Length: 192
Image (cartoon, rainbow, N blue to C red; front, side, top):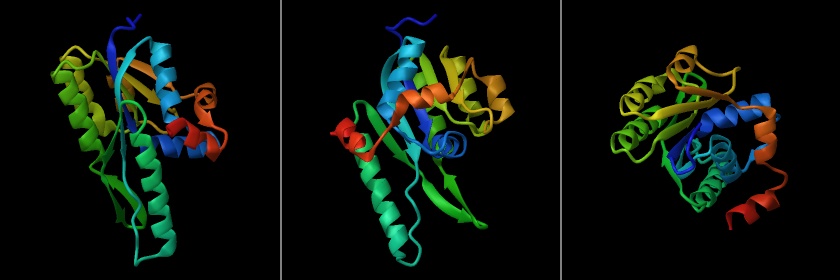
């Protein structure tokens, strides 16, 4: 059982969260502040900060649709930054083969997990991701006495990360329902 005075940081791979909400939960718009508040309430922890790792869309040949998509994402991230104790970390999106791949997200997140653990800024690291690339950072956090939590969906998670973290928390329909935004107007109210 955690003590509410214990601090946590939440590390969100936005690409991962976006993919599972799209494929598993019918693509709702997530209220990130509600998501963090629900997680901290359930775990009885005090949130120091939330870090959201993402990439801006690629604009190919001044394509108007690409430009519009990038502007929408920039506007969303700008609003997200204004939420209390939220920070955005940008990687780069690359086209490899015919697929878009996030670059630097794993490194940025891993560095933040390890640094905050080493500096004893937190007692709990809450990770929303499914990639095994985070395992070295998770091991390092545990070496520094940090309790590691993984929020994941079983449809998209690497088995090795499941074996490494201290506590597993499945992202369920119930959690998504508590955190979804019903309309775009609510997003503006939430962030303003």
